[in-house]
Image 1 (cartoon, rainbow, N blue to C red):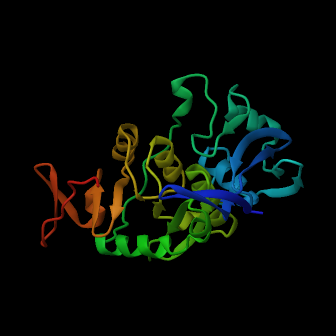
Image 2: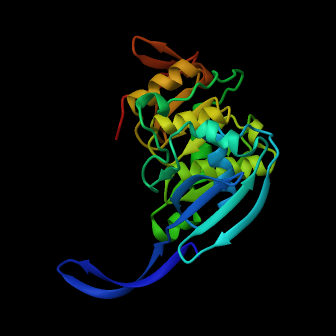
Length: 286
């Protein structure tokens, strides 16, 4: 059950009245890999296999195209527990965990456990080139993906992630109370359907922090775009990895922070100009 109904008081213009409301459900999911507890995440129920697979992929435990088996899904009094099997046994899981213990995550924050700053950063090769998308097409995909928000329409409480390929085909789509979970669910969906290696664009309804860019790079994305702000470490990682990072994506505007060439833009004295066309403003936010 992804939503619950509850009678609440709505206060309007000095008065209150009872009314039914739809509230997004939130529950824990435990992920066990090769018999080793790997992660415990707070998430929106549903898509458990996708979330588990996506989390393993974007956190560096699995590789795109790798085989796996879902052994079982246990429904508990509070939440669920999923058991996955991959090659390498328990030793492989412990090696990636590297003494950090069970990875935990609140739905609104990061979902990793670390004992020092170095453990937050994984070595990920730079992304490939060759993908291009026009600003107008990116805005079209934004409108298209926003229209898919079924849970947000009834609760107003979810983030979404949409994954697109080189031809702007929607490969996977997921909503969740957590922005990390939404990305991981979409990644797991694409992984399960054999599409993850086609990912070129990650489109997010949320802000773009370091770990969101890092997860996107693990999918091979060349463009990462979000509706909200970016952080300094996200920009630095995108710059170093060859990723085009876009924030405040709202028609007809966007902020392009790194590698504008994929959008047919070039940098001139701190502002971008569309090659051979008109000026393109990036002086938001708003």
